[in-house]
Length: 435
Image 1: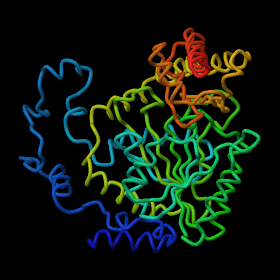
Image 2: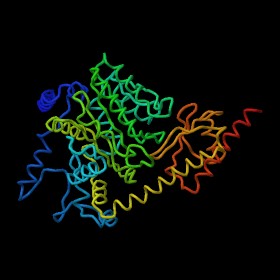
Image 3: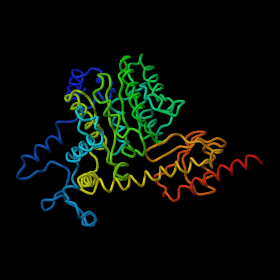
Image 4: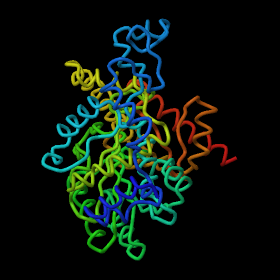
């Protein structure tokens, strides 16, 4: 193993041996190269006042070389903020701004010790980094039965972990914290569990309230008290889109620093929060009482970035930084929030009028982009195909009974017509089955 990796591992063991035990074999081997091209280039940037011939970019007239046909479309920005490589951990100013934003939007983080956010190539990349660092073959990755299907690819197929699911809702339609606790404690003999919390939930659009949130935190602490090392990843892809009386901040704040056997990891980003899906700007942040341990985890994280994508795209990081620093940012974001909230409220109004009760129920939702129908008389894939082919309505089939509908991409005035067409597709299937 590389001496730098050994040094980081020794630091982590000294600060919290439980966190070292959470690392995968790849995570133990990972380090950020402080010697070689990057370090020599950084040294030259400071001292090479005559000629700096260290880095693989091109310079012309003292500025990054670029094509006019590209710069003409980006003329509001300095070429220096677009064309050079961004640092592997991301633009420092962007990391600082995102940290400030996290503290404003998550008051429970105030006074907690957590790392500076590291820029990722959006949310999936952040989850993949967490999987590489902490998921090992036969580790249990605990997720609710209603989940984003890519978790299986990220943690299961790529890293060989076992996906363990539990019912998202209990009999009262609330978050099933008891089932989460049981799933964690079931890993006592293995000694380790990875828990992924995704709120607002994809696909259901559900976020727990404060009482449910406290029960989730307690379930994780109970697992830690039972001797399980728990890596808790809050997938906050749809953060801030909270439309009702639910938690309005990430559980990362409540989980950071809570127990020596709990490592909290926040994966979030501008992707959906700021409506810039194609820009691919996300962040990964660690919570621990030890700032020394956090520094070691940051170095392992930047090592993985260096070994996979080298660094994220510079232009999109610049665009996000510009937006966060704009005096119009909060006002414009609030305008979009109101549109999304209006769509969610309209969906509830439509579904609660009783017109569709013979065809479906719907799972509780209060946030995010989506909601799910629970079908009574037809299968979800039958309905998906019929609605698509007969009426031109696209939805997502998740199981025999569950159909996901993304209200985020439907104008509020079109929502009732869309559900009428889905209902018409149900009736068309029922009629065909009765023949």
